[in-house]
Length: 154
Length: 379
Image (cartoon, rainbow over all chains, first blue to last red; front, side, top):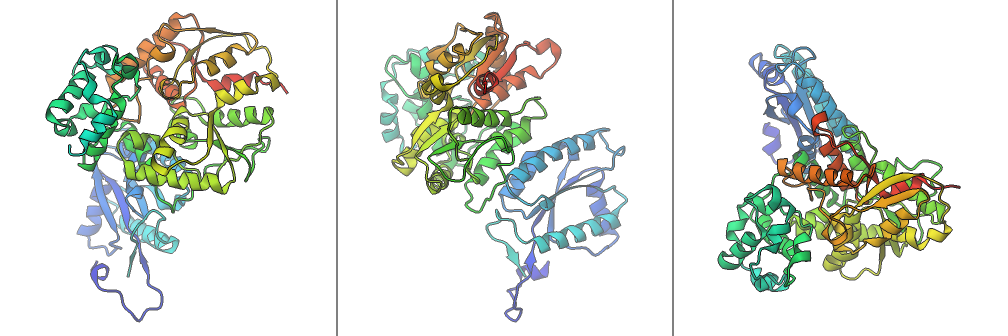
């Protein structure tokens, strides 16, 4: 995190882009999974902000669109694996909603790589860390969102 | 509200007689006793708009202008509401948007000049469109509606766009479809987001000018109102001739070959097309001119037509559903099998009212005006 506030180094020819990723994590699995990664001290990229929702099925297209509108470079929606949902079928709802979101984001002309739906259980701290690292890497390569008014650079 | 004096003069609010005819006809007042246009106007006159800013009911007004039709002194209540909303929005007040505000986010994103949309995929090879030309077909939000509502309500909003181009091709017009056309911003205007609306107007007008067109045709009443009356208000006279598709069809009716399509239909006047643009007869005449189509009128028609229950994707509640059900019942009582509307939003709202349980369904088919005309086209 420290690199975010430090003034930009003058030496480097090309500054590295730091993505700003919004994560919607469900209360029962993914949020606990993220916690698990922390408790187990698994090093992973800090360039994401988690917003806890009670269920991934609650994340409608409006959530993702608002994040993108406010300048998020990417959005990750994360919930329980199929069959594990605390509310039985919430993650099936999440898939339904995410299909709509994908259609809207595509029509808006944004890269579909910027939004992602993943399943992380409360025990999968390692998987969470890998997932975040991989996503941050992918978005760093993709560059800032056209709707991001102030992209962050190293 | 500091700037209200000028606005109140402009909207003729001072002339209010407090006769209450507005409240008597208001579709929202019928289903929500707490909502009263008369009370809101009186409160604004006596105490200023400050009280209204925190009032959720401020965002319930449909701006359908039914009250203005009845008002004996022509108070422009819808415009008054809009002016109060401008102030309320600047103070951070906001209503309760339907669909989680998805449509509002899309509209607000449309104000960003960097947005490069991907919205022309629906144009198939058999549709003749151009990059540059004299006539622009302004599609509106249909590609977004397709993604957001197409699956849930089992209809294809984009079929309206396809059928409009088919009709235009049939009468020998090859329209320009803009690659990066934005939402017209109509809803943002009525919700008080003036700056964003002006930005969208500028971007859209630039896009239209780049295409070299002088005439704009649209199949959406809200886009027509925005382009025809609201854009000149914020961006000055643009010299564009804006027409709704029903006007174009009526002008070119003699050149169209329509086959026999027996159907009993009734027509829903969208508030923007009717009371705002005074286009009542063009859709009716052209519908009735399709061989086999017989047009039946609902008791509330033309100037007195009831609205579809929600506008600007704002404050949709159980009351709005009741307005929609009442309107659908009225349509069914005419004996018509299909309710024809000229506004994609009317169709979305009516279909939403019909997608409840079976006991709540009225059971009438809903179709768009251009779908009916295009289905009768013969080569």
